[in-house]
Image (cartoon, rainbow, N blue to C red; front, side, top):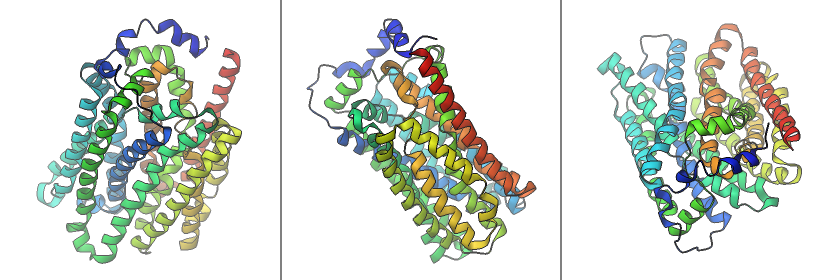
Length: 450
């Protein structure tokens, strides 16, 4: 198969009209100097707001929605139904990416980002004001599902290209370091979301929390979306950023063209990150649901343990950048996938060992997650030629979330409750094996193409 660089060259003319989309109107704008550190600020702001939205809904799915929207079911079945609705956003996300790429092609990057974050804000605020099942019956479930799909579509549409721009502008010997910066949005978002829920659980009665207290994190999420919208628009609409984005050909290409030319990179890139993405939900959402069902321990206290874990995750993400620049991003990701595979065998022994074991699982899991997740986004998407990187990186991320994380809470809780915790470990092991296989195939293709 031809080298991807030659593919890029041979098809440059075919896609020339996509490189001169309305976003290129500032191509001759003042070329001010922008450092990778400045781009990183925009990446962290955008990712932190997105992850906060993500975790507010995820925590509510485990702690609130089974009682509020599925009171007619057992706690287990209610949680499984809540996780099924949770997964809808991951199904909708690639659809949102494709739809909003068309919006950007026909209008501007600014219009696309504004519309996507408007939909996200409306969907999030809608959940905050949504009456419970006792008030609306089945209609509340339909509306919740629609709003969750809206969040997923908006998540796909909010891709601004800044992570790709950061990767392309990073110094060659510091690519691992700059690749990890955008990933810091995940621990920041979880820390704020878990802190809010922990505070509400600690200071409200169970009745008040389920009646109105759980809604406040969604109000906060709406407010953060507004702030993040203006912060990101201020970045992507400047002449300097527009010039850099256009200079690097970071405009949409048709999805059909992308898959014909770069389909293997999309698939391999999605599979390579599965270990990280599967572990992502097994240390955040799944333990919350399992403890709610099987333990009498304080949920506020457990959220605080997870907050300590997410600090370790942030430290791990930072360390991953240093390691990756020494040994390579793909080798780092492969080594951590092996560690996650080994860790998967501990799942039944730690989670089933009482509070001490559960805490150890969370702290070890978050530490591994940080080291792995820090390089999960950029290790293989660097394969894309520049003209395909904007769309390719977005769709690769969407598919990785869908396959690796979208159904993880549902599957892990379902198999654990019916067959035992060892099957949740098996699920994690399958993600690690998939990552190792994808990285191995990617390396073999790279050797053959060169």
